[in-house]
Length: 258
Image (tube, rainbow, N blue to C red):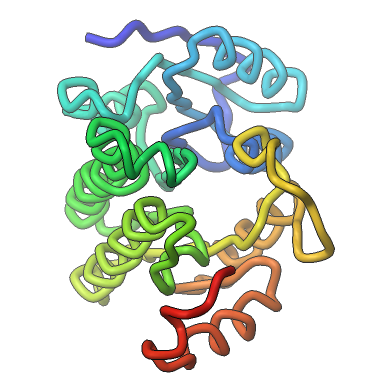
């Protein structure tokens, strides 16, 4: 059983939220938003020290309750039952947000089958296992909201990030299927597709005008949750950029380098 830590703040909470991959800069901003609303939070990450720091910060920001456990999304045994553990710890569950992510250099992935496997497991397989378990929980409960952080990279395969893009594309297809499965059962499914985001994961990338902050993405995600949206691009202009990219004929696309 993964080690779990608890920080009790009060008995009252507005929402009960489980976040997978809280070490993500975007996920941390999301957690801060809900902490300020007095929500009860269950956090997971493979970095236990970072989790402790985030949990302490969320307590100061007003979270009603914070519980967390160290969890590596590629460890199948750890994923087994994590949704149930979150629900038990918080006295119920309203929202599950999946934010786990890994963006390795594609040239390294090309030469390392284990890294390819890890990329697919962190960005797709693990998140889908958790989403599937949460879908069953919410379906039986009769209400709830699933949120998955995908990427614009999942819209079309590119040589520079085809493993990451393939994983995010799989996540999109999976959430689409969940949305159809859960339609009419009181459960909403949101897929968020950020473009370039300035986070520690992209620290080595050259930045430009298309880059967004984690705060901006988190704000867009929360608004989409409140509106009951199904799929959003963030910032908004990525929807039109990807519309153009997807429309390029394959015989031309294969010659491009971007």
